Length: 319
Image (cartoon, rainbow, N blue to C red; front, side, top):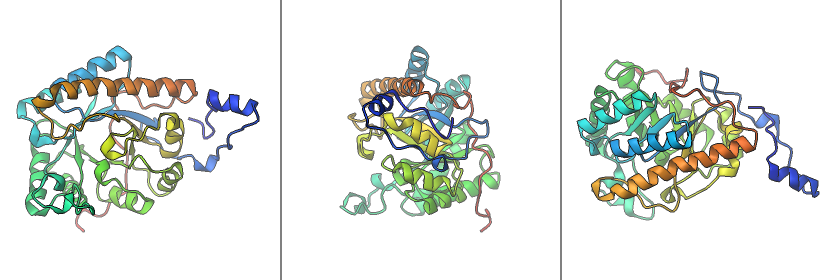
């Protein structure tokens, strides 16, 4: 993708009417990419079980939407071994990375502080037992073939990275930071990279300038909801997608869904909602891909099947 993307059709028309858009600045473009040379990948979130994954893959075929990664939000502990194995098999057959959430989180714990106006410790793991639960989930999931773990606690992130470095988890396991604790400044983003993050979900309300600031200090892959769920703000930033890629690459475009019911923790009681929203997330992806093509910005996607982040900076694991 050029540091100067083609202006979208709407901007050209406005320019002809004497309402020109500001010229893009080449220095604002991210100099980074994925190790395969791609600038962006796709992710379908909230894929809560085997049936939802099958729905996503079928809909992706029908709408010709390339899917690099799917992620689940309810947690490893909400899936049986058989369900995890089915998801691993289906994802592997399509060369799609499967990412499962690890362990307990504070918002489901007995502590009341997360329900106060201050939100207390939020989704982080409260106490030794919660960290141990996250580690148990990580060991169980990777032993069943899961290659990507989603975390919402800095201590859990560092612990799993150390376990990976020590050979207690497979060395090709990737660690993804949840939007629930996503960093909002370049210093925090760089710390998450050094703690072991291979993919970092930033809040969807960061400005384009914020993305440029982050890219001046870190090349760790970034995840961003092009459309965010309501509990993460409900932002819909489709028309900014080309500029989000230009500023934030390497970037996972996440196709979330606003104005939809909450799904976590999921189960059979939410089956129709899970499957219906899964289909619509893929359709949202098709809308974004079509928009990128119209704006002349649809190139530079990573090849399907790509998943590794490339070399990143880490704190010493024995620190």
